[in-house]
Structures are given as C-alpha cells and as structure tokens.
Amino acid sequence: MSDRAKRHFEELLDFMDDRVYPAESVYEEQMVASGDPHFHPPVLEELKAEAKRCGLWNLFHPHPEWGPGLTNLDYAPMCEVMGRSPHLAPEAMNCSAPDTGNMEVLTLFGTAEHREKYLVPLLDGTIRSAFAMTEPAVASSDATNIELRMVRDSDGYVLNGRKWFASNALHPHCRVLIVMGKTDPEAPPHRQQSMMVVPLDAPGVTVVRGLPVFGYQDREGHAEILFEDVHVPSSALLKGEGEGFAISQARLGPGRIHHCMRIIGMAERALELLCRRALSRSTFGAPIAERANIQDWIAEARIDIEKSRLLTLQAASMMDQVGNKAARTEIAAIKVDAPSMALKIVDRAIQVYGAAGVTDDVPLANFWAHLRTLRLADGPDEVHKRAIARAELQKYAATAAPAPR
Image 1 (tube, one colour):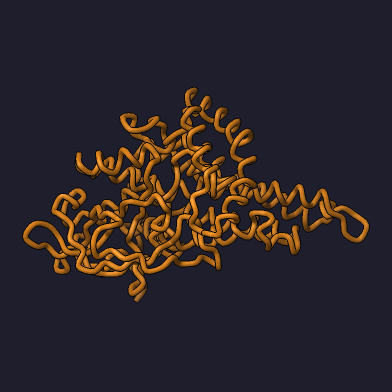
Image 2 (image 1 turned 30 degrees about the horizontal axis):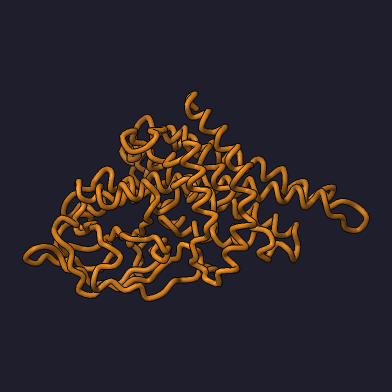
C-alpha cells in the first residue's frame, strides 16, 4: 500500500470501530420500526456525512479527477474492511455496488450530459443507480442471449423487453438505469448489444416487483422491470452502437474484484464470530473451542482466507500493472474462489452458533444468503471456470501433439 493509502486505511479502521459497528444495531432498529424492507434509515445519512468529513468517500474510484485515484491494490484492503459490515459500510462511504460500476461506466463512456446529470450526483451520494442486464427469459450468463430490443426511430431509440435482478432499483434514491439491450440482431454476436442511460421514471418503465433472495428482500432491492415502448433520445447511447458487450467487460472487471474484497471481509467477520462463540459456550463439560473438529475448522478457515486474499491482491496488482483485460484469468479465479471459501466458513460459524446462527440475531444467515447469490452474480462459477480452462488450454494449443488415429 502507498503511504497515502495507509493513512486512509487507518482512518477507515477507526471509522468502522467508532461509527459503523455501533450503528449496526441502530440500523436494525430503524429498519424494523419502518416496516418497509426498502426503507432508507436515517443512520445511513449520518454515516455518509461523517465519512465525507473524514475523507473516506468514493475510495473505489481510480480516476483522480473524480475520486481519490487509489490503485486497485491500495483499495483492496479497504474494501475488505467494508465487507465486514456489508449493509452499512460500503454505502456509508459511497462504495456500493452497482453504483461503483455504473460510476466507472459513466466516467469512461458517458457524455458531458450524462456526467452532469447522473455521475456528479452519484459521486455526491445524493442519488443511486441500477444496472439492468439480466433477463428472465434467457440464460443471461451468456450476454449474447440478451433479447431486450433497442430499435432506432427518428430521434432516438424505443426499448421493449423485460429485465430482472436489477439490483438497487428499489432503493428510494435510485434515479437512473444503465440498460443493456440488442440494437442489431444481424451483427456479429458480440456487436449486437448496446448500453443506454434510462431514467427510472421514464414513461413505459415499470418496476414489476422486488425479487427475494433466499427469502430476504434486500434493502436496495432486486427488481423485475418491464420496458414497454420506452423512448430515449440518441444521446442516451453509451460509447456507440454495438459497444455494449465491450462496456460490460470493462465494467465487470472492477466490480468482480470489489465483490471478492468484500467477501474476504465477510469471511473474516464470520471467523471472528465463530471463535468468540466457541470460546464462550461449553458442551459436555468442555468449551466448544477445545473440540478437535472446531479447531480444524478454525485452522482451515485461516488458511483459506489467506489464500483467497493473496489471490485477490495478485489480481488487483495485475489490473494496475497490465490492465483489466490481461488480468481476466486472475479476476475469474477469485470470483470462483472467494464466495465458495466464505460460504464454507459462514456455514461452519452457523453450526457453532447452533439455533442462533439461523436467526437474524447475528449476521451469519444473511451473509450466507448474500454469498450464495454471489456464486451467480457477475457471472456464475461455471462461466468463470470455462474462461480459466480455455486460457490454460490456449497455452498449449499450438504445440499439442496430434491425437492418435
């Protein structure tokens, strides 16, 4: 870490200890009292104001004209710490998905109008955004399957189709969608898609429902959205027609590594909870912590976390040094490894907690649901494994011996 990043990191640790962890119980109380799973609790605005005051704001943004300009390697440990309180810390510091990815897209590919109308308020934390790519009628892990149509008319485009799992679309501050659709079905497969900026309140945009995740209605929501003859001007287009797939790859690289950083923080907190519970409870005349199987779980957890962290730091370093495209195998590897690693630790922590582990008295059940979902979000494990295997095979393809007859 750079010296500047180290200062931010120490300030972040203090902010977590002094403000975020104590606010978790307040957050829960405010959410329960509201009766609305998508309520925006006042404590979050208090935390946001304090984070701005402390300079812990937009830490994710690598472009110095828009943010602190930290490298991925500098940001990685900070993002990990935020992952220890995933429902509070990222939003408190304006480092939440999918806004982080959307802000980078608007930074790299948005027009001056997009930046003024949406990027600046997003960077200020006064609005939120959603990313609409996944569709219920096709296997969206292959983005070439996308069916939402974007048909050119005299002065823009008309959008028709259905999206779902548009995370953040039910947040009360959500104002804009970045939508991926098909502009030219006759083009080569990876040139058929485009991305456009669409206001959430545009005529013809209907939020059909919020989708539960393992029974949870996440506060930001995962929306099913219907687009019926939604007209947008030509200026809504990002970068150009046929650039949607390329933009998605640029967007998902940083997004995937941010998820993995936060996942490691969740794993660390789950291990801490496991250890504290094991030391405080006794069964059959001895502390749970003295049981050999529990000690095996703790040792394996520490080993697995360290391996995942090093793999994630390697990917972050490669992104900084050779770019996201050259680091795609490493990014794919951590996206497979981190959720599975953390899920195992959380599952064992639940086991140590017993009945309490499946309640909302501790965050473990919610962690488990979130982590299991991340084996699908930003591409399922199988897609990433396929990419890793193809890259590995490519190393030997030119020199492979001919198959025997």
